Image (cartoon, rainbow, N blue to C red; front, side, top):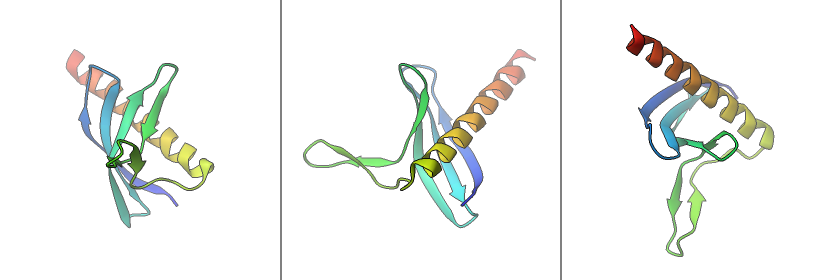
Length: 93
């Protein structure tokens, strides 16, 4: 499986939430509302989830293997960092 497209839907400068992202896998399926979160030690990706009646959040979509989760996270965060770098350069001009 390959991530064929990544779109930054919204970025934030305050709080831990940094961005909302959509991805397309193999040009066949889209996953929306992926969150980029700044953790205490590093940035990470949180998959789309919903809150159940008992207050627990449960992922709606998530990778099964740790390997694919790492691949998704790496590609999304790399794309986000490049996006922010380009935004900052454009603002500096």
